[in-house]
Picture 1 (tube, rainbow, N blue to C red):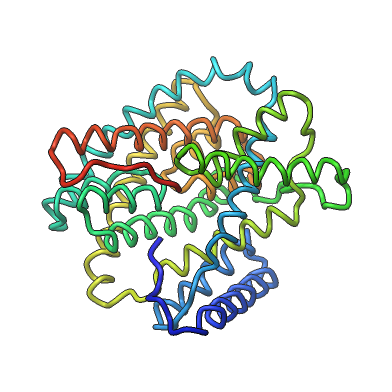
Picture 2 (picture 1 turned 60 degrees about the vertical axis):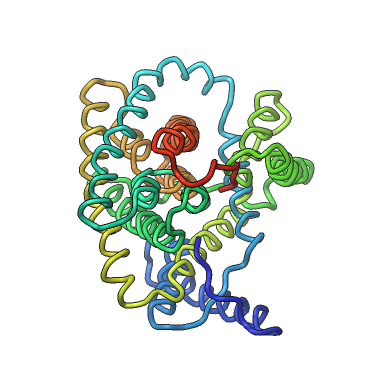
Length: 359
């Protein structure tokens, strides 16, 4: 995600402190207003409004990655032998994921190329519904405009994360009130230590082998293995998941620091229109999957919503959806998008070979 320019020496710590205070104020305000997911939306909108008002803000770097590791552990802990037995039943709906991506590309690339005037690599990586940082880094390596890519994908995530809860509450009757986890005091200390180990070790091991989305996928894989072995029997504590929501919301808002009016008019507006296109495609695929009896409406909606994996994980938890079902579909989408990027680059002869990246 795009960050503001490097501040003078001595200022980064002050800017981070200001950003944290602002985000905390937004969380408290939304909490008292009774807004769903206040720890996600409060920081997100507080930082977004401040960023668009011209305020200097700064993200919290590795701390946000730690928040993603918490969600990775939550996902991994939900993968049990019972979930694995359901995987064959998911194959019918998973088969729609590559078709879904292909249609997005066929619609999105011409839209960004012909309508928005983007160059080919920027158009392609703007259209692909991968992880925000993955698409920015891959697009940059391919010769695309990293600023435009960052704003397009930040806009996609922002709008999807804002609208999805409204759809869940008012169209599906899900109040988003499911418990996100037991308090830390109710979880055995050894379980907390093992989950902390799985979070950090999974993250660093995944980074070492160059796995994309290391901060969330590494902990997911290691925790899933420990869960299947019966070593991990709990989900991360409520406090940890709330903290993860806080930092994810903060980083989405901070992504708009330094946005100019020209960028708002062209890039952000282009991204907003594309989200409408994505929403139409997602609704069509969701409806087909539900009509064919391959998934329930809530699970299908969350599985095909083109938001970030971390954000969709949070929504699946609070909506009481089948977390394993939702995550497998998003992992399939992200994997296919990432693996398809070098093939696309080679096919059209883009500037440089693509390197590995992290989410």
